[in-house]
Image (cartoon, rainbow over all chains, first blue to last red; front, side, top):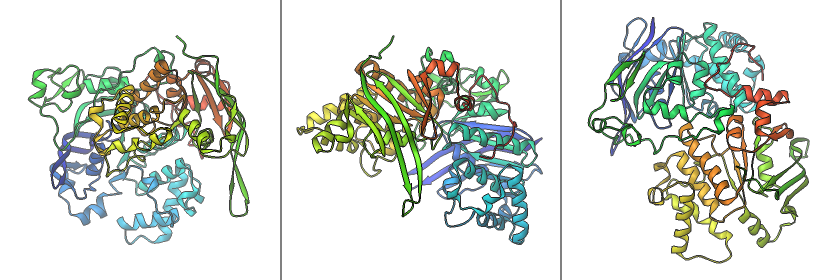
Length: 322
Length: 278
């Protein structure tokens, strides 16, 4: 059963000198109980997609088209801001924004931030009750209750990020969108945070997770399915093992070839990377947006956007397979 | 093929740095504790450890940005704490250069990237003409696989993180240093452009015999790039040796933990051992 269905979502940044086409025609569905990974380089529209999916669409970002359908068949893009705040955000859909842990207010204790966050969605809930459920939630995910009484600068990086995750899952949302939750952490803390996210799902606190990162090796550890994004478009969707071991799209192949792991044969391998830089989304290249960096480029790549075609159980956006 | 020579170029002896905390020196933090190691000419060593293990403090002491509390740093046999005069300092920094984590901070958004090259020319005794400078900048950009025409005259936001980091490497190459100290140079760069930066380090060692101290928390990167590895925990070096030996056969629990935390493509972790309370 799908908990979230995105259909042809388009979101542009409206600027004075033109539109930045950050999310172009994104369609996918998120099933109950799965962790969906979204991978791509910086500037490919991952974070814009995260903001759009969690309905936090602030100017200059503007939703141009598309539908986001939740379990009961409602398109939540059509709902009023007030209903979204009361009924959807935090309860059905929660977002952990990028580097949220560095944006916490240093003059407030974590418990004040928790009360503030819950009151936004449930203005009438008494303080004591909020503290009770947050204490329970913090204990559930292995954070000592003293965290609630601390200021965030008293916590280590891993604890900060875990507190942020605990705060965003307080109302037991069905879908948790995590945008680069492990970007600024070192490897051992990263493992703890990933462990926490998996256990949130296993314990039923959240049903499904959308995990956004540029690190495919991290997705390999936790995701069931993966979507690869390039320049605002989805270029490949498939099961994690299918994509990692048999990537089809030239971009995915490049992305996977750059993963460096401490295994004996890596030193002999010549790592090539992907030549060039991602395009400016104000004026993306015509046709397939990857063609200026692609080694298999063909004449039709420069003319028309390839269709999303099924191939070997995956879906690929490339003329090689169309 | 080995590029490492027997010449010891940099050596630290019992290097210690204690940070004192509070107004009346109430508390103290032992950031670097009795660290001794040496670096040969043409060698790449990596320093691996979690955040807070003292890697950056050590780097700052070696770059002479922080005075050590105890111990010595010897550059070509000379104690660097004796470099006090301007000429001595300039001479030291002409041979030992640093690159840091953040490829965004050194650039001023309002000016073209060419500006970051201005200060480095102060390290030369004689002034260069505009054309000479331009030529030196272009040749060092070529050394880091950047096309000068593509990057010069652009604003910082028009370049990717990997390109910016390579510009900063190019800047430190202008003085033709012997030692490059790279403190987490790739942790803020995308995986796809990270490879370019690593390749630049390897080719610099090959072509110029540069010695590199590569600081990272990622054992995978350390293994890929370096000859020798130092594992740091709480300011101490707890394991040291050839990278192959440490990766294949780590002796300390801490090193094993660091290794097992690296996500790889082939193996999937078992989750739920226990949710740690760190």
